[in-house]
Image (cartoon, rainbow, N blue to C red):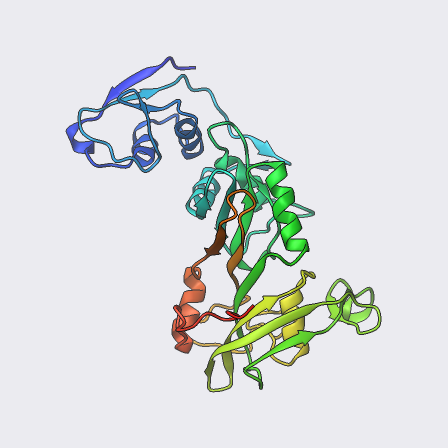
Length: 324
C-alpha cells in the first residue's frame, strides 16, 4: 500500500479533467477507483473536494490517499474498468435521491442464468460519497435502450416502485414498426400470458381468457412509405414484453424483433439488425420535492442512424400523449 502522495500539476497538463489525468498518470489507479476516491473526497485539489470533471490548473497540488483496492465481485460479477466507465457516462440525472441512466442496448438489467454482464453488477461504480450503491427500481429488456430509474435508498426505491405499480409513472417509448399501423393512433387492449407449450413456450402471448389485463396506447409520429413507421407507445400496465407483444398482435411488429416479429423485415444502409425499441422518457412527481419530473434519454447511436435512414425526426415537432 502506498502512502499519501502530493503531486503538483505540470504546465503540460493544464486544463485536463481530473479523472482523465488520474487514469493517465497514476498507473495503479483504475478508473473505478478514481471515481470512488473523488466522490468520497479522498482525492483533493489544493486541499479541497473536487468533481471528476474538474479542470486542472498548472501548479495545483493533487492529494492522493493510500491505495490498495482490487475489483469487487457483485453476485459473481467482476466489475471491469470499461463497464464502470460505460455506466458512469450513461448517467443522465442524479439529485442524490434519484438517479437515472440511459441504458445501453444489449445489456441485461439484472443477472441470471448465463448472464455474466448486467447493469446491476455495474452499479458499484456509482457508489456515492457515503458509500451507498444505487439500486434498480424497474427493469428494461436486454435489447431495449433508454431511461432506467435507480434509487439511492430502499425507501426511495419503494416509493418509486409504487408509482410504477399504481400508474403514476408516465412511460413513453419510441419504436420503429414494420409495416406501419393502419390507424394513426389507438389503444391496444389485449390480455397477456406466458405460453407454456408449443411454439409459444416461454414467450408472452395474447390470451383473452387466461391473460392478465394489458393496455397500451400508441401514436404514429411519422411514416416511411407504409413499410415502416416511427411510433410512440405509452404502456398503461407493465406486463413482460408488453409493447412487443401488443404491436405484433396488431399486425405492426417492432423492427428487428426476432422473438415476436420478423428480425430482418427491412434492411438497408444504416439500419442495425436489432430491436428498434427505446425507453424515451419517464414523467412523475418527485416523492420528496413534489416537483414534476421528466427524464429523457436520447437515442443511442445505432438507432439514431436508423432514424436518419428512414428520414424520421429525432426531435419531433410535438409531444405524444400530451393529453394524458
